[in-house]
Image (cartoon, rainbow, N blue to C red; front, side, top):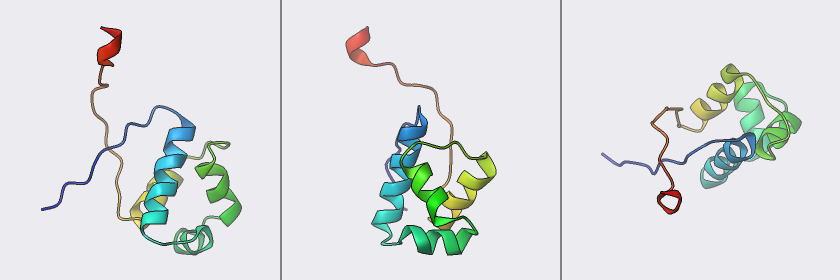
Length: 82
C-alpha cells in the first residue's frame, strides 16, 4: 500500500494549491477536470487561485475525480512557536 503525503489546508489559497498540484500530477487540464465533474473551467481556475469559495460538495467531486479524498486531523503546532 502506498501512503500519499498529507497537505495541511488552512485557507482557500492552500486548498486551491493542493487541487492544482493534484490535477497537474495527473496531467489533467482544467477543461478536462471540468468535463469530468460538470464544473466550469473558469470555476476550477478560480478555485485553484483561491479567489472563490465553493460548496464542500463541489470540492469533494473535484477531489474524487482526482482520486483524492478530504480528511481532518488535529492541527500540528509549529515547533518554532513553542
